[in-house]
Image (tube, rainbow, N blue to C red; front, side):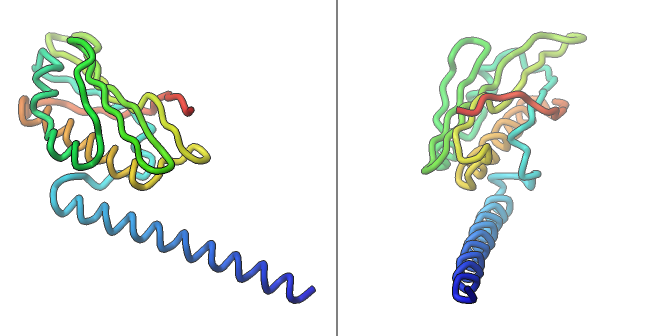
Amino acid sequence: MIMRYLVFFAILAVATGSIIIAVRSHDAKIKKLITEGKALQRERTFWLQQTLFTTQIDSVDGVYHATNKPLLDEAGVKHEIDSDSIILFTNKASGGSFTSTLRAVGQNDGKFQYIYQIDQYQGPDGYMKPKCLRAANILLTSIEKAFLQLDSDTSVIRRTAAFKQK
């Protein structure tokens, strides 16, 4: 009986240690990306939010061309203009993937509005894998920088989004 408890606690200790190592490794990689200016410090659940941009920029095409495509390629984020109002982004990492869009949604008081969000996510138990999480952060940072590069008066609002999990 005591042997079963010892085995159980040994397995529990190994699992806990593995989780701690994985979290610390992810945090170290994010910290490096932040230091390099490739990502921003964000909540771990940022990928569950929509980002609404209000700006003078009148074309999703301009934003697309201002994103850091070599950095997105390095992060494994594929990108393409789907139409004159949508940019599609995808990322696949071992154990997970996401699809996101930046779409023009109209005008308000003479300014143009765009929404960025992750539309679909595939991964274990509804959680984004660390590699996908880093890619999503790099992507959102690149989009934010593109808007601000083109219009420094761009306003940004975040709100909870609805997305589909495969």
